[in-house]
Image 1 (tube, rainbow, N blue to C red):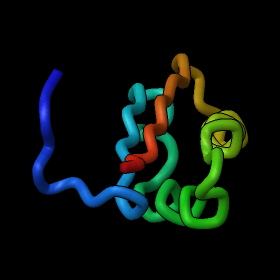
Image 2 (image 1 turned 30 degrees about the vertical axis):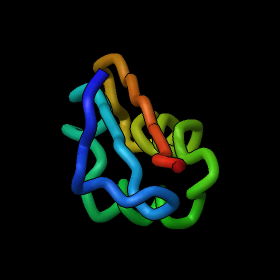
Image 3 (image 1 turned 60 degrees about the vertical axis):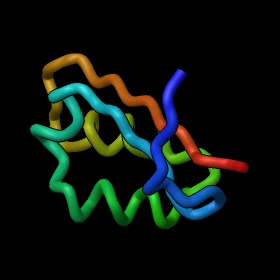
Length: 67
């Protein structure tokens, strides 16, 4: 277990993705999807990767920081 002192609860989140997403969907689009679907962006991120023709596997994990 570790501590990330720079993370602010209720404000920050962590997104881990495979290259199947970040190689095909531009970072600004990923940010837009997260902003528009802050509660659960994962299905929308997966769809965005598939919609642009991503042929690699698409994996993502989204963790919202809470106190």
